[in-house]
Length: 595
Image: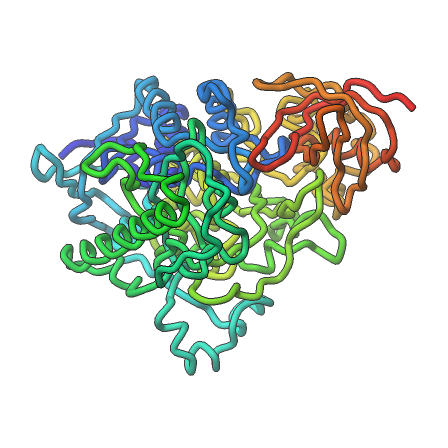
């Protein structure tokens, strides 16, 4: 038996984040993954146009560090498509993660593994049996982290878990169905979780011919381009060098059938599901290729027999922990009409217990029409953005097994709330929290649940390599010198974090707001001059000598400048990054303004 401080069963991006932070926190850590790659959603599952956490005030933690490294290593930049502000190649992401893992002397990574068995003793996990090329080996640890998409370790630990829908009567979630519907409508049995997607990569060749089809004749894809047309459907997930991520929810390659098979103990049943999902995505690519006259064809992005197919499916939902607290839809929604954040989790002593910030709007994937969801979006910076919400530390741990921590989307969250909590940026940062807590528990010789939340929060804010926000404060990006002070003051006096996500009260007056010119320069920036037209709600445009560019910004200071007064009709000089596929210019700073 091999003894380690922390064992991470991975395969998801939360798993690699947990392993990295555990090792950086001083714990001897082993990460096991079932495949040859590390990164889950951000690399091996091919979901390389991340949603959420796009604003610079949310680009913190391992997510922020990962994003900044991607910006340096993608020669043509990340402004590549219209669904996201970030598009990158899977191999670029995987190289970054493998380099980070290799650089940690306390971290061992073992790929191509299978989790065989979990041993428990006196209510704690004691060891796991891992099958690899070396045969079956047993590893014991003080803390175990589940960093898998489907909650594999959670399932084998015999810990109770959630799978599927919960009735509105449980938590009074506005978008949840009532118990009567759950029991009477076949849909909820046929569709227990959100639909996954097996990403397939295409490659663009030349230009799309002007005489192109306006519909795909092949069922089940015949309505897939009805909403946006062929070109925008294809370029939705465009990546550098004309690589294209096909992860299309509108009658595209989401998979809806027999999802309970994902939990089967029978390997042949799971393999059948894999073949169906892969075949469906390849058929979608073939239909788009035929319809576009070969403009898109199979791409090469992954190792293996078929380099167009991701190494694993994109699971939007899996088993979910029953934790010491559960994040529900009520925790995501703005506090009141017009508010710009969700409620803070406050314990009985009046302390805020948030350890991570989520921002995604809420998005559920099922067959048929969109599921009606309570709104949690705001028009911000010339585009729609999700209002931020908090994840409490108790959602990562349970009372039943005190040395198990969840690092992936299977933390304690309701089915409805999972639609907003499952995205790459938040999961990377929740994995970071899980790894930090595991390392701290080992160092202090205590149970994970006995750690002081304020110690975890302070360690996250002051983390040397990837400092992470724990409060939804809009004003200060990570690069601003007052970012740490703002986070600490918000924790010390959470009552002074107002509904707009800004600090108020006497102590807030000591913080100087960032000016519009202070954001660091970014790769691929250009200078632009012209006349500003439009307005904040409908969108701004910059009328230049070359044409008209729609404008967006991810910078709080630029948004504040646009909001301060009616800027329309002013001649301005800006710096920003052009995205012809958006199409828009992402404004990073204001250089000059003249009447």
